[in-house]
Image (tube, rainbow, N blue to C red; front, side, top):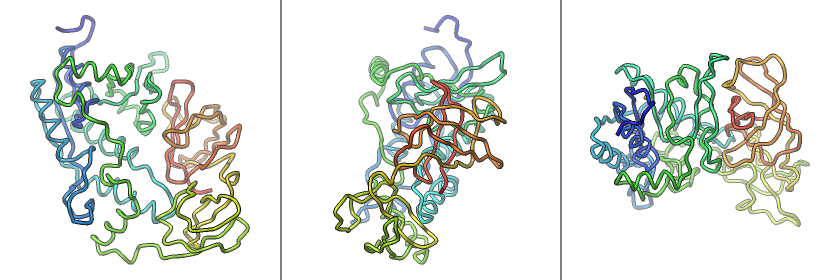
Length: 377
């Protein structure tokens, strides 16, 4: 049956093979829209990089060939056309390479943000426009609304804050938001699974993916070792160097800065009377700087690549609640816009382990004000 009051449209649906995107497609199909399903082939799991010690591909629950198969099967069950976009080259250039370089620079990147906005959504949006689709739908837990008075599209957190995925969407432009549709934005995860079961979707009980698709075992430094070796770029691997205290005392030796992250405590190989944490990574000096827990706290940081969603770049300071990583509880702060899409963020209270390479997002209550990328102090 067609839902009364819904304007029927032609919609491109991103289908990852998971329960969320599959349920989003089922909801829109039930409403009577004309759907075209798309999935994206991003990373060749058999390439010889994402493999175990025996050379076998590491199992992955995100963007694998099995996911492509699952997405196709769901599309067939819904009776909608389905296409696979091969974006392996684009994915490596815009996601994998920057990920590797970020670690080599002493940062801790979050590739899923760039992948969602710059690659997945941008590619699907471009394809959708080319085939005459009105909207692009995904399984993200987020909401978008049009503010007629401001003539602006606004992005909001998903109603279920624990599953909220607005953190991955702050780079979307007004043009892209105008075509965005997030059918799950008002739902709980349990409701999504109930709808999937009622629709007899093949993936209704499929487990969620938590890992980065091209590093399914979560061993980032080992992936970088294999990647650079595979590309004949072993010379780029960081050499061993000093672990020093914040006062400059040499305490030990590290095995390469790409093996360490801000806030890390385990695996430092240092005996000390108090627990020590990585508080800074100095690429230029090839040093890992460690300190005590309170030395992880920072009151401010700078972000680059800032995208203002709720309004154009402000001329006055903006009050907002700011996240510095996905599971960080947004904290009150003042944001000062700087030239060249930069901003300085000053918290009311110090925050722990603000890490270069991570994404930061600004909220006004439920609304996404904007976001950026944390850079070195």
